[in-house]
Image (cartoon, rainbow, N blue to C red; front, side, top):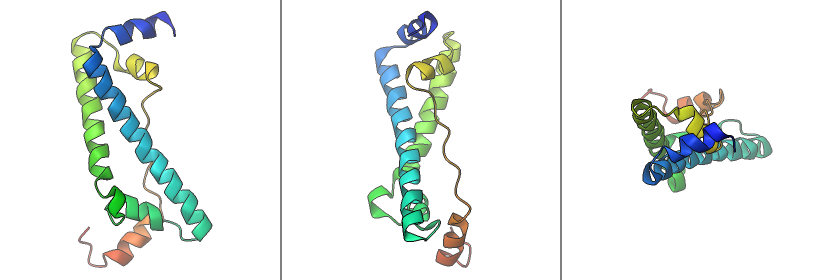
Amino acid sequence: MRADLRHAATQVPPQVLTRAKHALRTLRAWNAAIERARRMEAVAQQPGRYEYDLRYGVDAGLAHQPTRTVEAWRRLEHFAELAAVHGVDPDVVYATLGGKPELLAEGEQVQAWRRDADPEGQL
């Protein structure tokens, strides 16, 4: 680990660092679930079906995952604000933790499933 990365990590209280790690894991888990859904769609030849289930709560096992993902993103935004106040570069801290992932964009085929499930546009 480079010296600036070590320094940034030591500037953050352990509890705050743990919250940031948890939020990053949540975002990575969401992306991994989307990627698994897309692989299953390719096998089933039903593009968008499983990703739709994940994103819109049809899959009861992950019905709250989008909410957790939003909460994780907010925790990281708050972390970045606090880090800036204390002179710590949040991107350097994220780098020590494996980087901050971008959330995968909704697949184009998801909209077709959404229209079929909600023809009146309530979702």
